[in-house]
Length: 481
Image 1 (spheres, rainbow, N blue to C red):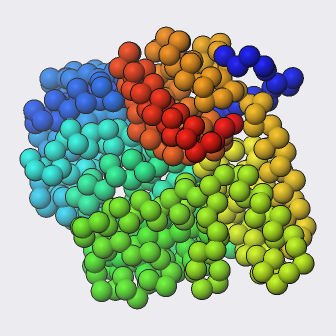
Image 2: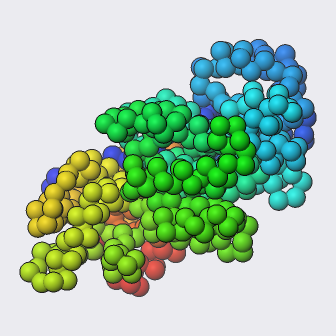
Image 3: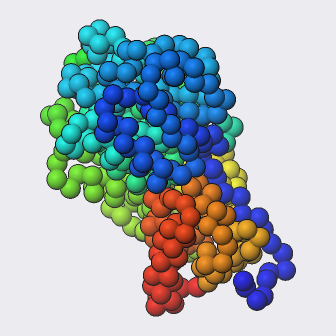
């Protein structure tokens, strides 16, 4: 590894968003395509065990004290006792893969009236023999189940949640693989399908008249939400044609103005909300690419962007060193500097600094800065002091893999080539390698590694080839740690 080690080392403590990992995926399905997708999980989620059960009795007898996802289809779910499954498997999520077109396009209540068995499922997803084939969506389904378990357990670790509000399983089944590809292991996804369910999640109440302005942050999960993606029309008070999205956008804008809002809809009513949200027309060519750019730019996952009051981009900052340079510019006694300080104040009030730091794996720094409410030069000095301290420690913060300490990109490549693949796999599974690279300023390399999962020599070879490519790229641009 590095020949010359720093005199003092600082520990790298990665942020693990899901302390509870799904240990088992249990299939009880008549549809062969769903059962066959177990192979996809074996390849892409090697930390979990897949089991295929053949009878209602085998499901009824299944017991586990580990996190488990049960996967059913329209034929099998009516045959099982969901209550007994939950009692025998306390950390479990029951998922319905439905091929029924009515269920694909229906809110929960109409689907449950016509097909009562759908009420047994915690999550409902759509599948078809064309675009929504199970192998394409199975990893996202299991990940959504894992996110739900961790959100329910209310881990003391600060959470970061993308809230998806849509009543039709068809749409979010198609959308989730793209969303998970964007966020990796940096945030969870929560799906709600009615206005009341959404209100309970955000505010801990079902009606806005019961929101307590003094303690609403502690009663719901709204403070953990980093992005809202919502339809305009979804059920409110059991009315499926209700434009509840309008009310939701109004409440978020009032109580959580820091949360970026994305409206996924082609309805003409969506146009009326474009001043408060980014419009994503469902199904339009290129819409998901625009979504990726917007999430990166507005939820803290990409560059740190500074906009003026008119929405014009002033600065695009890639790392904390660049952020310090902007803060130094804001200290000056000039009109542009004063205007920049005003922008910084509004960003501080909306937690944009801490959110960006969290998303780039500066957990401790985000914790320090999040409660701060300062103004003017005092705010600039506070931010600069903490960021400069972090920069000073960066070169002395190694990533340890199987006892080998990596301080540089060369060190890390050497470790990947040297240590056993079983020591690398947990770091890849939980985005630990990407998190460390983010802190070091290698965000593009971190981004490419985030979807990489696997085991054995195949995983090591894949990571090494990606590292080797980016090592040459960074060398050409004269970047060093």
